[in-house]
Image 1 (cartoon, rainbow, N blue to C red):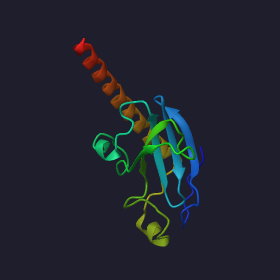
Image 2 (cartoon, rainbow, N blue to C red):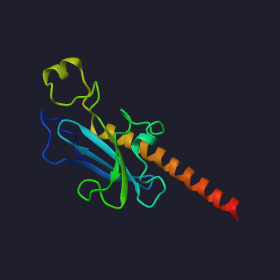
Image 3 (cartoon, rainbow, N blue to C red):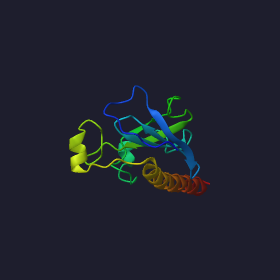
Image 4 (cartoon, helix red, strand yellow):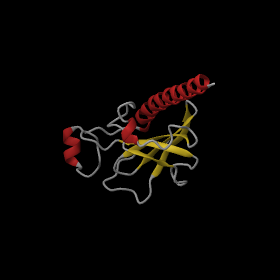
Length: 145
């Protein structure tokens, strides 16, 4: 696990701070330099894959809400998974652009460990949601027989 280092500018390419698995789902935490982002990847063959993040935002409790959903790009977000993500660049979050003002206002610099703790929670929610969808589909198939 690499620690998030806040910079006054965006990185040319994101830095992977953590790439791990929880609840059978992949978690990737990236630094964009000015702020971090977190992602949970689910298998592309699951019914939940392909659902736009806007449709799940009310179900997933993460910092600032979901802000991303897409197939893995093979660079930072591995292929074969559908990724849901959120960022730490909201009001009150340190984003590096305002320097002393952010310091003075006490804006939060998130640690990789804090982000990871939240990402584990989000992975747990996704796992529960995936299991529920699978049960509903299974029951529906049983009722048709």
